[in-house]
Length: 128
Image 1 (tube, one colour):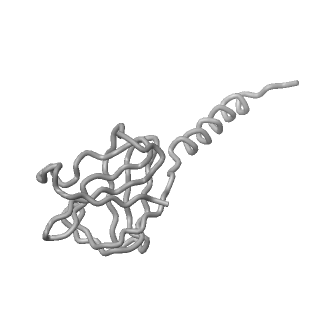
Image 2: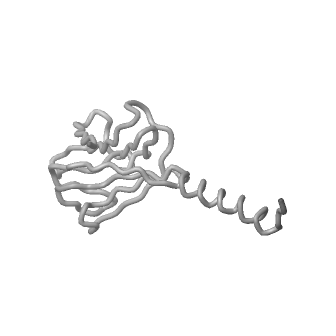
């Protein structure tokens, strides 16, 4: 049996590309938000949203099903209820404002700038 240089170089390269593709895979969950809300200063209509996480970089992305709105945030280790996609909103007289986004074990920091008290009413939407 004869081993050539090309097979020695190509085999590990193919394995590296395949493993990178698997590691950077995106998991997605659909959430139905029953009310309009504000995120990053933009008004988002009620409807279906898709939340995903890039497991390699811990980036959480929220986009509307019709792709008219899309937001991405860095995320860190989360608190409770691993495996659930959850959006948490502050509730005030002016409406709903996105507070945090959690996907599985990672969660964003306060997206509303922490300007609201933890005692304010909050609403959560959990993915399917």
